[in-house]
Image (cartoon, rainbow, N blue to C red):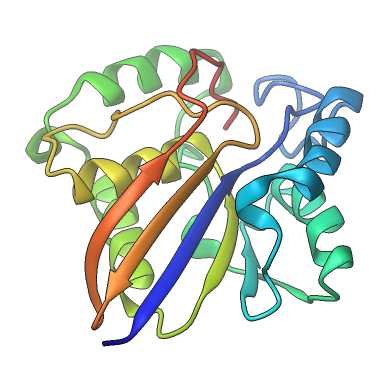
Length: 187
């Protein structure tokens, strides 16, 4: 029986909210959070893992300390970018997102359904261990699908929270969550 581990890590605290900056890096607190990942008990043996990141700066910066520790190149993957909202006015994004997280899956806009399906399909396609630095809604989209919940929002991952997914014989077996706290969603 083959086993694969897929570890999702939410980015650290961003320096700006999405309404103030299109692609903020980490705040000083976010940098500290990403450095604290070096001591995280689940992240001590990543030698045999590939490292992927959302192309957003806050995710890339969160990856840097662990990538350096394990001498890994961080590959960027658009699949794991935050929920698409480019066609939503900045002043309306918060209200739009509040509506999206309350929607049943069948009522989601097609572009959100496609984004969610791509996350699930890409995650299911991995044939080796991988660490993915990503976002609040990406983690929710995947975990809600794994848990068979009929909405996007499943939990509230704190900054630098870890979700570990285990696949056995190329099928999802189980997942573990940490850091379920009420935090802001920074697209």
